[in-house]
Length: 240
Image (cartoon, rainbow, N blue to C red; front, side, top):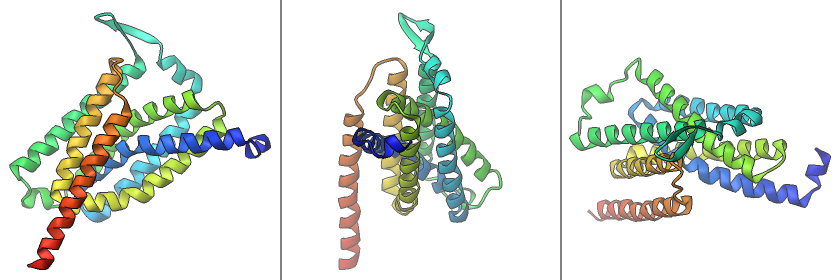
C-alpha cells in the first residue's frame, strides 16, 4: 500500500481510471435524474441517495469478485455465429430495459398524462423506483468494473477510483435531477439519451462496439443546445 502512495504510475492510473469512471457514471446520473422526477422531492432525494449508495456497493462487491467477473466474459451461447457471454446477456437485457423504460416515459410525456394521478404520491411508487434503480445499477456497475479491471492492476486503485467517481455522481445528481424536473424539454432530451445509451448497451452485448466518445459527444452537444434554449426562454420571460 505504501508503494502505491509513492508510485507515479499508481497516481497516473488512479487519475485516468477515476476520469473514466466519472464519464461512465454519466449514464447512471441521467437515469437517476429521469426516474426520480415522478416522485415527491423528499422521496426523490432519498431515492438518489439509496441508488448511488447501491451503485457504490455493487461496484466494490464486484471488484472483490474478480475471478467471477472474468468468468462472465467466457462464451455461454452462440446466436448466428455470435458467441455471447453472461456479461453480453446482462448488457443486452439492461439495454432493452433502458429502451423500454425511456420509451414508456416518452409516451407518457407526449400524451401529457400528468394530471392529479401522476402528481399524487403513490405508496408503491418509491418502491418501484428503487427496484428500477437496483436493476440499472447492476448493469452499469458490471460494465464499469470490467472496464476498470482492464485498465488497472491493483485492487486498491480500482476501489479508490470507484469511490471518487460515486462521490462526484452524488454531488452532481441533485442539481441535474432538479434541472430535469424544472425543464420538461430537458427531461425529453434526457429520455432520448437513455434510448441512445440503451441501444449502445445492446450493441455491446452483440459485440458491435459503438465508441463511447461518439455517444458522449452527442449528449454534450445536445445538452449545450438545450442549455442555450433554456437561457433564451428565461431572457424572453424577463424581457416580457
